[in-house]
Length: 456
Picture 1 (cartoon, rainbow, N blue to C red):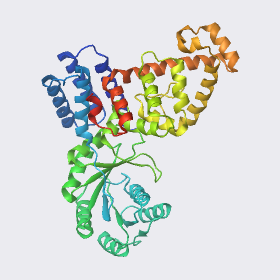
Picture 2 (cartoon, rainbow, N blue to C red):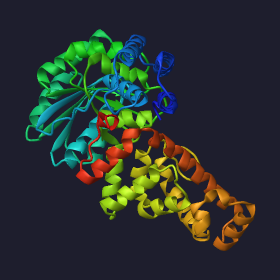
Picture 3 (cartoon, helix red, strand yellow):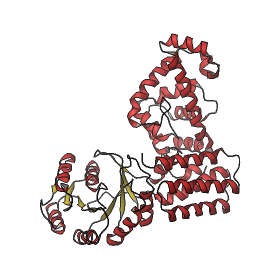
Picture 4 (cartoon, rainbow, N blue to C red):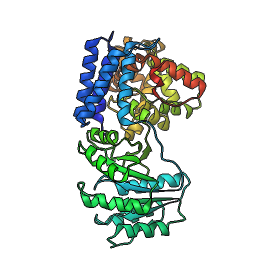
């Protein structure tokens, strides 16, 4: 996954901060150095990385935690806020009749994004049409035509026409009764005067409400200057970051977004037409830092039939330092449904599936099967063993395996999973405001996510 390296490095930094007994100048210096190194390794622009870490250091030294907040939590809050300046806060594409022009270099995913956008608007109840104005790439016309058929929207293009302005004029007239018109434009391997001139002409004739810059998440540090040049030419109003499911550093894309100061509207997470997510800066950053995703977690609770009191009780068990096998069994009983598991796993800090590996959405069924086996194993344990897993020795493992019809290997695996889960939840417990905020949100029904997770 793009940004995995950055996420891993930043999460380790957060662990250091939350695990420290105090914050002094040496701690701040080490944190600044770690954050700077993580950003630079992930292709974040050098100037941007230095400015961010300078701001981080200045704030950490000069600002004081508000009443009731520890210095550790305050330092994490500052890291969060400074990184959010790069990523940007939420800004949604308005659902209204409009013309959208997609711009960007060759191979960034403009044509596929056009189809995904069309499907997005269709699902919102708006009619949408696609205009093929890419006259340079071989088979661009055919690809967009096929995508239009796939998502069920009107298509307009003039095959063989070499004047994109003529195509757009005719397309806008042909689709005048369609609410949202999306124009797919040409790209190049690199910026050149012809490309800039072409998109300027297209903007003049199309008068688009939105000029969306489509940017490959795996692009390097050249992304910034390229984005700036296109922005100066046509005025980028928003960004779609594609290929977030691929491999790459990702910092170049974030640098480009920061450089042109335009909001990220969407991120592409796969090749299918449904693989387009509305961008939420707070949610994205919380996942990146391993702080969890309260909004997704609350949605998971809402999808169950349990009461608020039961949800709060389960949360207390998750957050408890005395978490045991019986507590784990109770949580699984309430939440181990495939759709709910998917949300829970996405939302919990550093969540893992049975087997101890980093979660993969495709492994939900495997996880479900293992949890079923684990519940059978725990049904063969005594109350004392469930309450005190540390007493389960080799002799007890043999008895439990025989009684549950499973193997000793599976029993030992369950015990390893229990220990891993307990260790992972320590980080959540370390965020002192997390549990309080969850309780308040469950009671109030407010399932939003913002920086308030650090303000309790």
